[in-house]
Amino acid sequence: MGFVEKSFYCRNAHNVAEMPKLRVEYDRENCIGAFACMAVDPDLWKKNDADNKADLEGGKENSGKWVKEIECSEDLKEKIVASAEVCPVRVIKIIDVETGNVLVQ
Image (cartoon, rainbow, N blue to C red; front, side, top):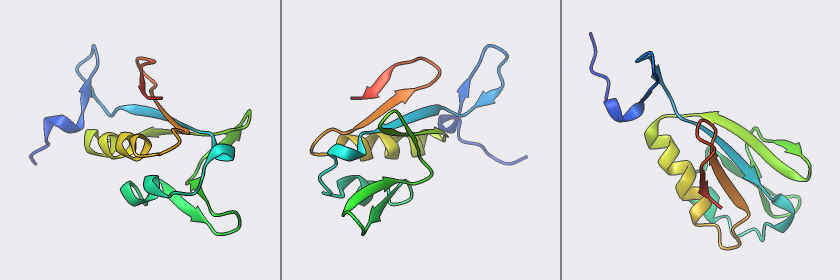
């Protein structure tokens, strides 16, 4: 049996390992193209050469915002949160789907 680091999982009431689920909401229209988000998490954020703004990889447009829900390890959660925190114009919001807590506004 292999070793599994506990920090990668949350536990529910049935003691079944679950990964955190985050909702990324991105106000792309107000992005200034600093690409700080991309520097922190190049897998989640891609440069769009057409308008020199970041694209949320795999995101879907919803009421003027780009949205993506992601199940992730604790390490990846930290990386996603950090990519939002470095945005100089604060156009990236991160929400914990399970609790509804806003992690980055």
